Length: 337
Image (cartoon, rainbow, N blue to C red):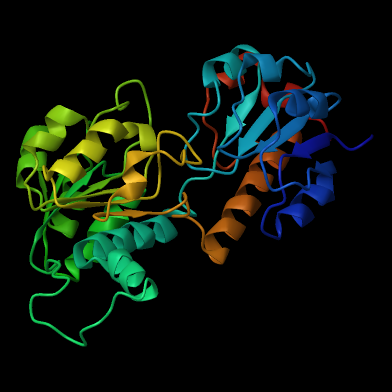
């Protein structure tokens, strides 16, 4: 039997290719930039599987490019770029890569929090810009302490819990809000206090956001919510850009509703050159790299490959998004090897 054909939208971190080559005929697009929609549609013709990234919008139009397509595997923990309902209707399995990027993302959220609190990026620009004229001054470039402060965690999934574990070493008071509360033992083991979103915003000195982007979480943090926060508070977002109303956040930072922010995600990526956040000193900006450790990206790519190969072998993938698809196209019918 001929091997099933799969398309990978961009080169990934090894060893994903070894996993795919064992069972599939693989085409890897070599460009670093994401493919255009038309390029993607052309490439999918005669393919059984697609391994994509969060930068590719996979909707019904793309899926219809090839009726043979049975699996879309995304190398990401978020899957808001995939129309899961349309995939399910067509009997297409959608898989994702949770867990393996948890610690890398939590580490980076913490890096943004510290950088915002202690003005690290601002200090770096100051030195590189040749403006450092006095060796040391008692009131110069003052930031705020992190230890002993109150950290609010918005979204207590894997990454939110990992951030909480790191915060315990700083002796912080830990608050959280989530629409789904974890078991009581999780709250107890991490010394977490549950509260409403409004109270979380009012009491947090640092707010770290870890929710998926859905219709309910779009602009969850807008002007009303930002005005609830302390004027000394810092906001960190490593989830999805559209969870925060970027225009409102820019005004909040400029007008002093809050003290600072650390952002890895934005409503439009890459950012436009005219984005008002770029001109502000009290925000640390990163180009969506929270999971960008060699170890995490390698594990993500390998898991995305294993998810894809599992479906093509007629086996349950490690991480399936749309379990409903099993009733529409059983794994035995998805099998291509």
